[in-house]
Amino acid sequence: MAGRQIYNPNGFKNIEEDGSVIGYQFEFKAQYYRGFTLSIIRDIKINVDGVDEPRENIRITVNGETFTLEEARTVIDPEYRWEFGDYAAVTVLRRGGLSKGRHHIKAIQIIAPSYMPFQLEPVCETDFEI
Image 1: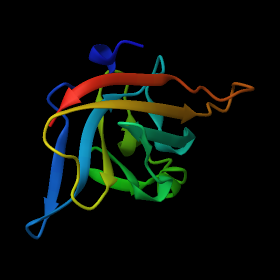
Image 2: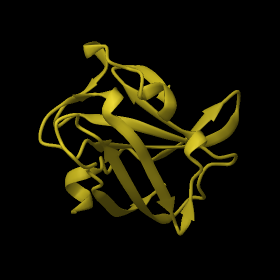
Image 3: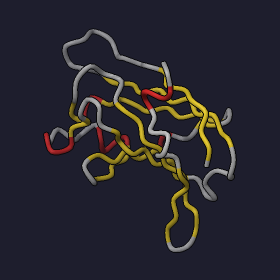
């Protein structure tokens, strides 16, 4: 899939807490034809520059609220829907974040709509710069 349509090119950045870089963040769109509650997200797999990120280090932020991937599976509140066309912020906790310069990301959104007999697993790749 074309990264330009999925990722916000201005959404890649390192994040700080108390003066230390604790990870990085990016914004991307749901790869589904409609909005959905976070409870159908089964996983978001992230690989940057050939390094797979541990699932427990990934967070998703929708409508200003941040959830671990396990917490997201329990969110049925319509206030926290990932709407079609909207970017969600994905944070990866990684001490020191990413080095300045060019990087390559491959992310897989795994969602399981209740009315489909299979999971959807679109692969989203692009190059970006921090």
